[in-house]
Amino acid sequence: MKKVSAIALSTAMALSMALPSKVNATSRVDQLLSNMSTRQKITQMLMVDFRYWDEDLSDGAQTTGHEFTKMNDQVRKIVEDYDFGALIYFAQNIQETEQSYNLSMAMQKAATKDGGIPLLISADQEGGSVYRLGSGTALPGNMALGATHNTEYAKKAGQIIGSELSSIGINTNLAPVVDVNNNATTQLSV
Image (cartoon, rainbow, N blue to C red; front, side, top):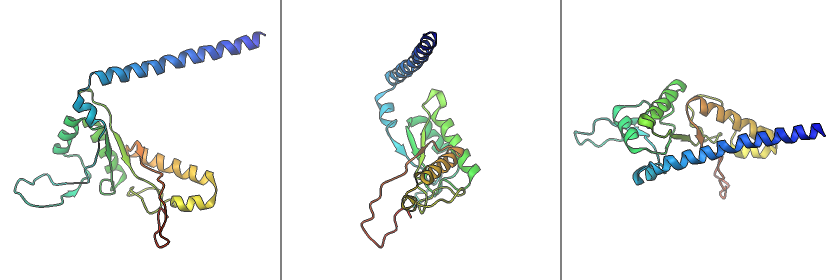
């Protein structure tokens, strides 16, 4: 009987300690939202990209810009001023591990200046032919993983991708995706 009582008491204590954190998190979110302007609430729902950038278009020249791989003062000001909720990287942004990490840290620093909310920094690192990382582990595509009928392979691939993205400051992977291969000549996610 003492053993059952001890287990019940331990369970009750564990549950009571878990509830306040959820309530506190909810109240922190409510407080944060109540202090935001309508503009901030809208921009928090936006995911932007800075794939290419040209710092000097003042001469009216038409250009596609340069691959955006390093924070500059113009983009820093935009990120500081607009309170975007998310950012997506493409292959143009991710050249090398250290460069990508530094870009992510600079983006987060700009976003959180003056108490701002950290960015969701994302990429669509699906594996296979959709591969955004300039370096890292080359993995088979999802179609190939699925063909093995081995969930452990898929789980391990996901862990590797997640770990590598996290190491360069990417906290959201826009993958896996569900592509429907309705054309036998198309290789989707292979």
